[in-house]
Length: 243
Image: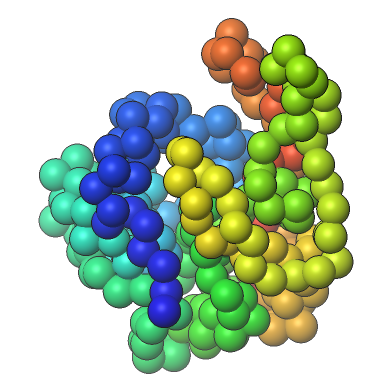
């Protein structure tokens, strides 16, 4: 059973209060780096896997894409996407990305933001993406960094007074499900190593273009807790091209 936490009303309300939910791309700490590695979208057909509120779909549409398909497992997410980020060339589809099926060479660009750590079988998904993409197509995604997902809890260690001591990294090479706590709720995420992420792409036939561990931008450093984000990587950005 594929987990769909975002259709849980309590969880969705908490998610809607996050900066990236309220402010869009400008509220996402990794956006300043992700934007730099996105391709030219003019006249392109684009697939956004796990599109959420559709912020990236709207960005792609506004930057000249011919057609944009955003997919997500959550009805609530897509309802909000339709309200906040609609356009004539954007279509939204409620389907888990593992269940999607398209004809070969359908898309020029495939993007995904912070969704692949919810997928159990990354290798099969990457092979599907490769098949769906046109020759020389570009694949760009963000995912929670393996250092961040390794231990599972995704929280700091604190002293008796509640001060941060360090971030736990353990069981790094033991890939698989983790019982993570996100927005105060238990969520199943899947940990895999950096080697697995990158070699899966290479062995499938992709050519790596960019690998970035984004640091918090200077204009967000005043946000409470943001300076501590310099102590360990939270997000991994990857751009690849179909050979």
